[in-house]
Amino acid sequence: MGVFQPEVSHDSQSSSRSFALRWKQVNPRIVVLAGVVSIVIALLILLYVHGQSKKEIILVIDGQVQTLETRETLLGDVLAKKQISLQAHDELSIGLGDEIKDGDRVVINTAQKFALTVDGKTQTLFTTEDTIGQAIGKLGISLEGLDKIYPSLDTAVSADMEIKIVRINKQVVQRATNLPFRVIKTADPSLTKGTVRVAQAGKPGVMIQHIEKTYQDGELASMRMIGKKVQTITKDKVIAVGTKPLPKPVVVAAIQTSKPKATSKSTKVSAKTSNVTSKAGVDFQYKRMIKNVSMTAYSSQEPGIGTRTASGTRVTEGRTIAVDPNVIPIGWWVYIEGLGFRRAEDTGGAIKGNKVDVYYDSLNHARNFGRKSRTLYVIGPVKPELN
Image 1 (cartoon, rainbow, N blue to C red):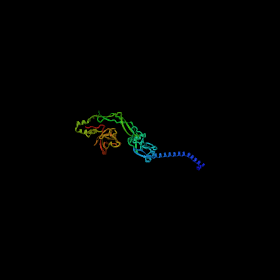
Image 2 (tube, helix red, strand yellow):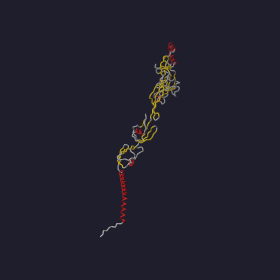
Image 3 (spheres, helix red, strand yellow):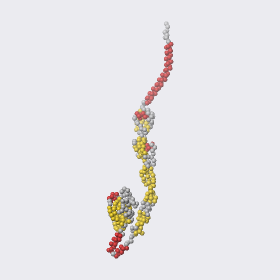
Image 4 (cartoon, rainbow, N blue to C red):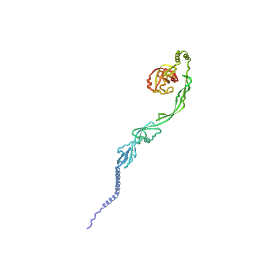
C-alpha cells in the first residue's frame, strides 16, 4: 500500500513566500511608528501631570502674607485666577510672565497716588515707598539749604495726600535811616530872662541797618534787622536860655518911695504892661493871650497818627499839643485855662488859626474830650518854673 502525499501546488508555495516577504518589509515601520506614538503619549501624560501638579507659593502684598495653592505655571495666570488686580505703577519681585515653582515667594508693593507741589508746579505722582522722604528721594527731588517740606520727611505716605515743597532763599541788604537830633536847653546867665539863642545847630545822624529778607518760592515773606551801625553821629541842637534878671523899672521904684498908696496901682499897671500873670502857683510872663481857643483832642491809637510829632519829639500826654505854627511857634510853651502848661510840638492839617489839639494816650479819653473853648497864654520857648 502506498503513502498518500498531499498535493503541493505551485500557487500555494508562491503565496506563502509573498506574505513572508511583505511582513518582513512592513513590520519594521509599524514597530517604529508604534514606538513614536508611545513616546508622544508618554510626553503628553508627563506634561499633563506636570501641569496639573499642585504648587504652594507665598504671596506678600503690602506686607500682608498669604499662602496660595495653584496648578498654574505663570505668575500672571495665578493672579488672574485669584482675581488680584495690579496697577501700572505697582512693583513685583518677579515678572507676570515668569514661571513659578513650588515654594516661591512673590512680593507685591502697590503704588500710592499723591500730589506734589514744587517750584510753583503741581503734579500727580505714584510711589511704593513708605515715607515722604523715601518717595521724593526715589523721584530724584532734593531739598536744598533752608527749603521746607509739608508734611515732614518722616511722614508715612497715604493715598491722595498733598505734599508741598517751599523753596526758601535769604538776602541781606543795607538800608540808611536818619537819627533825629535832640534839642538841649542850657541856662545862659549872659542873656536876660525870656531871651533864647541857638548855640549849636542840630544835625541828624545816619544809621546803616542790615536787613535780612526771606523769600518763599520767589516772593518776599518777611524782613528782620540783623545788625546796625552808625555811619554819621547825630549833632544835638543846643539852645541857650537867658537867666539874667530883667532890670526893674525906675518909675516903679519912685512911686513906691513917694506915694505908698499909688504903688499898688502903679504895680498893676506895670504888670499889665509887661503881661505878667500867676497861674497854678507859677508867676510867668506871656507874649499874648488868646481867648475862645477851640480845643479838641487826639491819640496815637488812631490809625495813621503814630508816636512822632512834627517837631521830631515823641508824643507825651500832659505836654504835647498840636497847633498852627503861624499862631503859636513850634517849641513854645503855653498855659491853657483848666489844663495847665502844654508845649507846641505837633501840627495837623485841620489845625488852623486859633485851634489846638491836645494829645492823650487813650483813644477813649481823647474822644470823650469833645470840643471846648478856653483862654490860652502864649509864653515862649522856656517853661516857667515854680516860685
